[in-house]
Image (cartoon, rainbow, N blue to C red):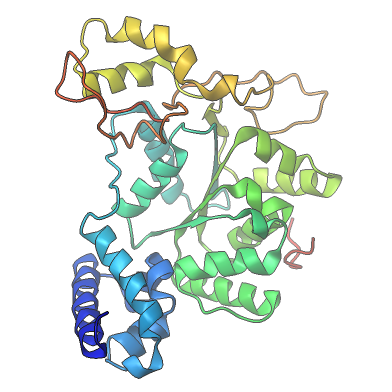
Length: 353
């Protein structure tokens, strides 16, 4: 067991490493803590306790493991996502992100509906990594379903806002922050936020210059917006603030084009890549596990609508790993030295039209 002096020396070394990373990113303490909130917990802890050496004000036994994990991530101890930006799933995603950031009107929301393994989360994380000062990334949890304060606190943590006791105070703090420092906020697993999340996004778009990227599974998202008349009304109102068409081209999984590019990059396939891609496409698509109805890849509309669903365009997926745009090395291949695996209700009361 290490002595207290050894723990303090390790703590100081970890803090110095993390401080260098903050300086390299050029982020303010608030934005830096928001980005690494799971490790640094709060701006006060990082700035006024750890950086100033007031270790008596923190629990060293709890702080050390968190900082060790953070430094391990920074230094490559955690898996690094290797994102191929020329894959259609990322290329199409990033085009829409750039379109969103140039918007000045109230249409400052894009919605990406994609099946499991299509790469939506990796696209979002990679984009945030490229633009750390202008973006924030939050993952909704199932326990947040229609819980206004929990959702607002989740958003607050990633933009550097202190937690408040009441929903009204938390919303006011978020609005004040986003007015002063507008960001593009990526909300992953948005279906877990319920209809209350729709209302919060609408309110923040109305009252601040911020932008939103909503990421969700098609069937679960459809279930949220069709859960009640209130939910459907909120979805229609949010649709007025959304850039159309809805980005649902990956709702049914990957395409032969994505698989073909993947095979060329990973396995060195050339002339036969297209044929192989077409033959294995039914295997790598997740639709056999999570079948979608013909209309589930579109923004939910009343039953009388005659709108035809758009055809899916991309995403690489299978049950073996996570995502095609974050490949990992695996078994041997005759065409390469190694073979990466194929990836796979109360709400804000501010009323606006």
